[in-house]
Image (cartoon, rainbow, N blue to C red; front, side, top):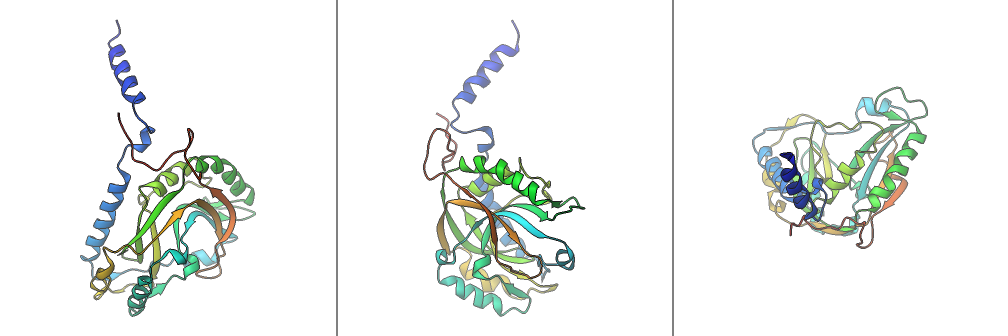
Length: 267
Protein backbone atom coordinates (compact mmCIF):
# COMPACT_ATOMS: atom_id res chain seq x y z
CA UNK A 1 0.00 0.00 0.00
CA UNK A 2 1.29 3.46 -0.90
CA UNK A 3 2.76 5.40 2.03
CA UNK A 4 1.11 8.53 0.64
CA UNK A 5 -2.39 7.17 1.26
CA UNK A 6 -2.72 7.92 5.01
CA UNK A 7 -1.08 11.36 4.59
CA UNK A 8 -3.37 12.28 1.73
CA UNK A 9 -6.46 11.16 3.66
CA UNK A 10 -5.36 13.17 6.70
CA UNK A 11 -4.83 16.31 4.61
CA UNK A 12 -8.19 15.81 2.91
CA UNK A 13 -10.01 15.50 6.26
CA UNK A 14 -8.20 18.57 7.64
CA UNK A 15 -8.92 20.62 4.54
CA UNK A 16 -12.61 19.71 4.52
CA UNK A 17 -13.00 21.14 8.02
CA UNK A 18 -11.82 24.60 7.02
CA UNK A 19 -14.55 27.18 6.54
CA UNK A 20 -12.36 29.42 4.35
CA UNK A 21 -9.78 28.91 1.55
CA UNK A 22 -6.10 28.49 2.35
CA UNK A 23 -5.20 32.13 1.64
CA UNK A 24 -7.48 33.04 4.55
CA UNK A 25 -5.22 31.49 7.16
CA UNK A 26 -2.71 34.26 8.02
CA UNK A 27 -3.97 36.51 10.79
CA UNK A 28 -4.06 39.59 8.58
CA UNK A 29 -5.56 41.98 11.17
CA UNK A 30 -2.82 41.14 13.68
CA UNK A 31 -0.14 41.47 10.99
CA UNK A 32 -1.48 44.89 10.00
CA UNK A 33 -1.56 46.10 13.61
CA UNK A 34 2.02 44.96 14.08
CA UNK A 35 3.08 46.74 10.88
CA UNK A 36 1.46 50.00 12.05
CA UNK A 37 3.20 49.66 15.42
CA UNK A 38 6.60 49.15 13.77
CA UNK A 39 6.12 52.13 11.45
CA UNK A 40 5.29 54.39 14.39
CA UNK A 41 8.23 53.15 16.43
CA UNK A 42 10.62 53.55 13.50
CA UNK A 43 9.50 57.15 12.97
CA UNK A 44 10.99 58.07 16.32
CA UNK A 45 14.41 56.75 15.31
CA UNK A 46 14.82 59.20 12.41
CA UNK A 47 15.66 62.88 12.34
CA UNK A 48 14.52 63.80 8.84
CA UNK A 49 11.48 63.35 6.62
CA UNK A 50 11.59 62.69 2.88
CA UNK A 51 9.76 63.94 -0.19
CA UNK A 52 6.71 61.71 -0.63
CA UNK A 53 4.85 63.55 -3.40
CA UNK A 54 3.48 61.36 -6.17
CA UNK A 55 3.33 64.19 -8.72
CA UNK A 56 7.03 64.20 -9.59
CA UNK A 57 8.45 65.65 -12.80
CA UNK A 58 8.25 62.19 -14.38
CA UNK A 59 4.60 61.88 -13.32
CA UNK A 60 3.64 65.19 -14.96
CA UNK A 61 5.49 64.34 -18.17
CA UNK A 62 3.57 61.09 -18.67
CA UNK A 63 0.69 60.77 -21.13
CA UNK A 64 -2.94 59.95 -20.48
CA UNK A 65 -4.29 59.37 -16.98
CA UNK A 66 -3.37 57.16 -14.03
CA UNK A 67 -5.76 54.37 -12.99
CA UNK A 68 -6.17 52.64 -9.65
CA UNK A 69 -8.66 50.68 -7.57
CA UNK A 70 -9.67 52.23 -4.27
CA UNK A 71 -12.27 52.58 -1.58
CA UNK A 72 -13.34 56.17 -1.08
CA UNK A 73 -13.37 57.56 2.44
CA UNK A 74 -16.33 59.91 2.87
CA UNK A 75 -15.33 63.08 4.68
CA UNK A 76 -18.50 62.76 6.77
CA UNK A 77 -17.09 59.52 8.22
CA UNK A 78 -14.20 61.35 9.91
CA UNK A 79 -14.41 62.69 13.44
CA UNK A 80 -14.02 66.41 14.05
CA UNK A 81 -10.60 65.73 15.55
CA UNK A 82 -9.22 65.30 12.04
CA UNK A 83 -9.23 69.10 11.76
CA UNK A 84 -7.05 69.35 14.86
CA UNK A 85 -4.62 66.89 13.29
CA UNK A 86 -4.56 68.87 10.06
CA UNK A 87 -3.94 72.08 11.96
CA UNK A 88 -1.06 70.44 13.82
CA UNK A 89 0.45 69.09 10.59
CA UNK A 90 0.07 72.42 8.80
CA UNK A 91 2.48 74.03 11.28
CA UNK A 92 5.33 72.00 9.78
CA UNK A 93 6.72 73.70 6.66
CA UNK A 94 7.29 70.40 4.84
CA UNK A 95 3.65 69.22 4.98
CA UNK A 96 1.16 69.24 2.08
CA UNK A 97 -2.33 68.27 3.24
CA UNK A 98 -4.71 66.12 1.21
CA UNK A 99 -8.16 67.60 0.47
CA UNK A 100 -11.28 65.77 1.64
CA UNK A 101 -12.30 64.63 -1.84
CA UNK A 102 -8.95 62.87 -2.32
CA UNK A 103 -9.14 60.68 0.79
CA UNK A 104 -9.19 56.98 -0.05
CA UNK A 105 -7.82 53.54 0.77
CA UNK A 106 -5.73 52.38 -2.20
CA UNK A 107 -6.47 48.78 -3.15
CA UNK A 108 -4.45 48.27 -6.34
CA UNK A 109 -2.53 50.64 -8.61
CA UNK A 110 -3.21 49.75 -12.25
CA UNK A 111 -0.92 52.04 -14.25
CA UNK A 112 -1.04 54.81 -16.83
CA UNK A 113 -3.80 54.65 -19.44
CA UNK A 114 -2.84 55.91 -22.88
CA UNK A 115 -3.78 55.18 -26.48
CA UNK A 116 -0.26 54.12 -27.43
CA UNK A 117 1.51 52.37 -24.52
CA UNK A 118 5.30 52.42 -24.71
CA UNK A 119 6.37 51.57 -21.16
CA UNK A 120 5.74 48.57 -18.93
CA UNK A 121 3.42 50.57 -16.62
CA UNK A 122 1.15 51.75 -19.44
CA UNK A 123 -2.01 50.21 -20.92
CA UNK A 124 -4.72 51.09 -23.42
CA UNK A 125 -8.26 52.06 -22.42
CA UNK A 126 -9.36 48.72 -23.84
CA UNK A 127 -7.03 46.83 -21.53
CA UNK A 128 -8.38 48.79 -18.56
CA UNK A 129 -11.90 47.72 -19.53
CA UNK A 130 -10.64 44.14 -19.77
CA UNK A 131 -9.38 44.34 -16.19
CA UNK A 132 -12.73 45.73 -15.02
CA UNK A 133 -14.58 42.89 -16.69
CA UNK A 134 -12.34 40.29 -15.05
CA UNK A 135 -12.44 41.92 -11.60
CA UNK A 136 -16.15 42.58 -11.26
CA UNK A 137 -17.25 39.07 -10.22
CA UNK A 138 -14.37 38.33 -7.79
CA UNK A 139 -15.00 41.63 -6.00
CA UNK A 140 -18.72 40.83 -5.81
CA UNK A 141 -17.86 37.68 -3.85
CA UNK A 142 -16.76 39.81 -0.90
CA UNK A 143 -19.39 41.10 1.50
CA UNK A 144 -19.55 44.68 2.75
CA UNK A 145 -17.43 45.27 5.85
CA UNK A 146 -16.93 47.93 8.55
CA UNK A 147 -13.81 50.10 8.55
CA UNK A 148 -12.39 51.99 11.52
CA UNK A 149 -9.78 54.68 10.87
CA UNK A 150 -6.99 55.70 13.21
CA UNK A 151 -4.88 56.32 15.05
CA UNK A 152 -2.70 58.73 13.19
CA UNK A 153 0.63 57.38 11.94
CA UNK A 154 3.46 58.43 9.65
CA UNK A 155 5.95 57.05 7.20
CA UNK A 156 9.07 59.11 6.61
CA UNK A 157 7.34 60.68 3.61
CA UNK A 158 3.64 60.85 4.50
CA UNK A 159 1.18 61.04 7.39
CA UNK A 160 -1.70 58.60 7.34
CA UNK A 161 -4.49 56.94 9.32
CA UNK A 162 -4.29 53.26 10.21
CA UNK A 163 -7.05 51.11 8.71
CA UNK A 164 -8.78 48.50 10.88
CA UNK A 165 -10.90 46.41 8.50
CA UNK A 166 -10.39 42.82 9.73
CA UNK A 167 -8.02 42.32 6.79
CA UNK A 168 -10.56 42.77 3.99
CA UNK A 169 -8.74 45.40 1.93
CA UNK A 170 -5.68 43.16 1.90
CA UNK A 171 -7.72 40.15 0.78
CA UNK A 172 -9.34 42.13 -2.04
CA UNK A 173 -5.93 43.49 -3.05
CA UNK A 174 -4.44 40.02 -3.34
CA UNK A 175 -7.49 38.76 -5.25
CA UNK A 176 -7.24 41.57 -7.80
CA UNK A 177 -3.57 40.90 -8.44
CA UNK A 178 -4.71 37.87 -10.46
CA UNK A 179 -6.18 40.22 -13.07
CA UNK A 180 -3.89 43.27 -13.26
CA UNK A 181 -2.57 44.06 -16.72
CA UNK A 182 0.57 45.82 -15.49
CA UNK A 183 2.43 43.74 -12.90
CA UNK A 184 2.41 45.61 -9.57
CA UNK A 185 5.46 46.87 -7.71
CA UNK A 186 6.05 44.40 -4.88
CA UNK A 187 8.96 46.27 -3.29
CA UNK A 188 6.84 46.85 -0.19
CA UNK A 189 4.08 44.58 1.13
CA UNK A 190 0.55 45.88 0.82
CA UNK A 191 -0.74 47.79 3.85
CA UNK A 192 -4.07 49.66 3.77
CA UNK A 193 -3.89 53.29 4.82
CA UNK A 194 -5.57 56.65 4.35
CA UNK A 195 -2.90 59.21 3.51
CA UNK A 196 -3.81 62.63 4.91
CA UNK A 197 -0.62 64.52 4.00
CA UNK A 198 2.60 64.14 2.04
CA UNK A 199 5.92 65.63 2.99
CA UNK A 200 7.47 67.85 0.35
CA UNK A 201 11.22 67.33 0.76
CA UNK A 202 14.17 66.37 2.90
CA UNK A 203 13.78 68.32 6.14
CA UNK A 204 14.37 68.06 9.84
CA UNK A 205 11.51 66.17 11.44
CA UNK A 206 11.61 68.20 14.63
CA UNK A 207 8.89 67.25 17.10
CA UNK A 208 6.56 65.69 14.53
CA UNK A 209 6.11 62.37 16.42
CA UNK A 210 5.39 64.19 19.68
CA UNK A 211 2.93 66.52 17.95
CA UNK A 212 0.98 63.59 16.48
CA UNK A 213 1.17 61.32 19.52
CA UNK A 214 -2.11 62.55 21.18
CA UNK A 215 -4.01 60.89 18.31
CA UNK A 216 -1.90 57.75 18.01
CA UNK A 217 -4.40 55.52 19.81
CA UNK A 218 -7.61 57.28 18.81
CA UNK A 219 -10.37 56.08 16.49
CA UNK A 220 -10.81 58.97 14.07
CA UNK A 221 -13.66 57.77 11.91
CA UNK A 222 -15.61 54.78 10.70
CA UNK A 223 -17.79 53.74 7.77
CA UNK A 224 -18.99 50.67 5.92
CA UNK A 225 -17.12 49.75 2.73
CA UNK A 226 -19.74 48.77 0.15
CA UNK A 227 -17.88 49.09 -3.15
CA UNK A 228 -14.50 49.28 -4.83
CA UNK A 229 -14.04 51.92 -7.50
CA UNK A 230 -11.77 51.99 -10.51
CA UNK A 231 -10.80 55.64 -10.92
CA UNK A 232 -8.46 57.74 -13.03
CA UNK A 233 -6.39 60.78 -12.08
CA UNK A 234 -5.30 63.55 -14.40
CA UNK A 235 -1.58 64.18 -14.34
CA UNK A 236 -1.56 67.97 -14.53
CA UNK A 237 -2.29 68.73 -10.88
CA UNK A 238 -1.42 67.31 -7.48
CA UNK A 239 -4.93 66.43 -6.31
CA UNK A 240 -7.28 66.11 -9.28
CA UNK A 241 -10.83 64.81 -8.84
CA UNK A 242 -11.02 61.01 -8.68
CA UNK A 243 -12.93 60.24 -11.88
CA UNK A 244 -14.94 57.03 -11.58
CA UNK A 245 -14.50 54.62 -14.49
CA UNK A 246 -16.33 51.70 -12.89
CA UNK A 247 -17.97 50.79 -9.59
CA UNK A 248 -17.50 47.23 -8.36
CA UNK A 249 -20.12 46.60 -5.65
CA UNK A 250 -19.47 44.32 -2.70
CA UNK A 251 -22.19 41.86 -1.77
CA UNK A 252 -24.82 43.41 0.51
CA UNK A 253 -25.31 40.16 2.42
CA UNK A 254 -23.98 36.66 2.90
CA UNK A 255 -24.57 33.52 0.91
CA UNK A 256 -22.99 30.30 -0.25
CA UNK A 257 -20.70 32.11 -2.71
CA UNK A 258 -20.08 35.17 -0.59
CA UNK A 259 -16.85 35.57 1.35
CA UNK A 260 -18.19 36.82 4.65
CA UNK A 261 -16.24 39.06 7.06
CA UNK A 262 -15.10 36.62 9.76
CA UNK A 263 -11.83 35.01 10.70
CA UNK A 264 -11.15 31.38 9.70
CA UNK A 265 -12.83 28.75 11.81
CA UNK A 266 -11.75 25.14 12.25
CA UNK A 267 -14.36 22.89 13.78
